[in-house]
Length: 289
View 1 (tube, rainbow, N blue to C red):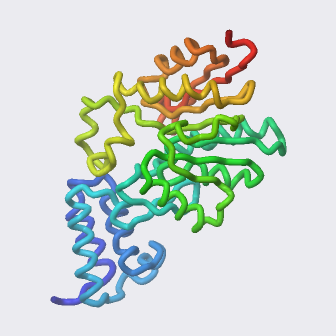
View 2 (view 1 turned 90 degrees about the horizontal axis):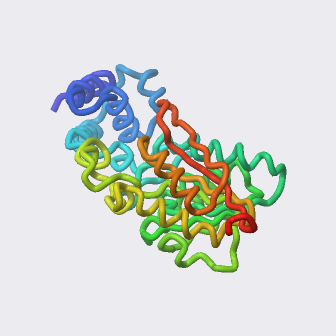
């Protein structure tokens, strides 16, 4: 096999992936950078560098995996979120840029309390992206993060250690089941399953490789959202806020569930694409009866 340059391999990868990825060149660059353990800037700096046959073979294998539809983040085992590196694996959803909206608005809400040690709970933490991003910005907050899947808990703890954010308490729980009834939280946040099991998007793109249990919910995708809204009332401090990520067509229904359960000031936030993505509301215990 004739040795090829960085530029040639990126060109080959881009051509192979052009019909299966809307970011073919970037995918090719990320995969080659992963093989070489180099940043993409290195690829731009040394385009004519000839690569060893072993590196070329490994790169071709990874391109074939991507060609089959496997997400880049599962191939490389990494995904950046909130400018932080997160380990990823098929036990969890891949952190998505739109979820940064959730983090951003939780932080905006939290800033109104100044330097108070707010207590926060992240339900269904997955990689730990939400909880650990919040902890990176608000190290004085007391943050719990839970997930039903033990493999996800292990991964989130691995990310916490890697990011040196080990003050976040991460443990297994089916929603609130293992959360102590003595605890109360100023903020509860979740990106729960919210896709209907008949949604055609489940057969498209990266989600084909992601765990269905983290994607799909009954009742047109609203079952887990409704469950969290009901149960959170027992765990929120008086006037505490619940933030939920949801599908772009679900905001009206989510608001209805909030209001039906005595929450107040329900508001919806749009994502970077202009779609409804996060709805949040407060719960005043003394005014809920």
